[in-house]
Length: 115
Image (cartoon, rainbow, N blue to C red; front, side):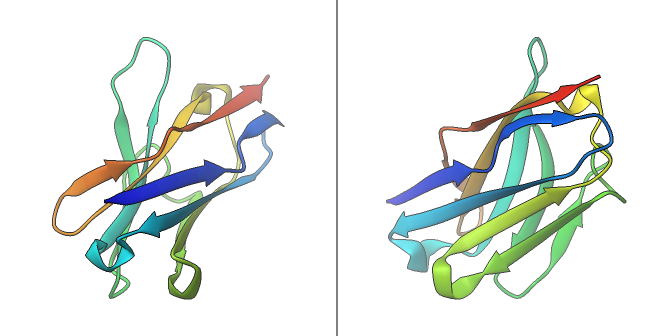
């Protein structure tokens, strides 16, 4: 099993930036890919970005062009920086990880963007 703990959420003003962090523990050797999702009130959970152990990165439309995902393999951590935050970015942000599929999830961290 893998445990994921997110941090870095909070209240940010429109146009600001935020860096989320997630640290994995447990059977971290099972991890090949890590990523971030979010879920806004009344919306389905949506993927934002993923990064594999080999460094392959995928961003999706909600954050493409204004976000950076990165890994710290030594610390079993993944980070997501989002710039130019908008009120519609308000959501709970979840860290996820897995070997071939994203099987493990954190509890989420709230990000609120004030207008």
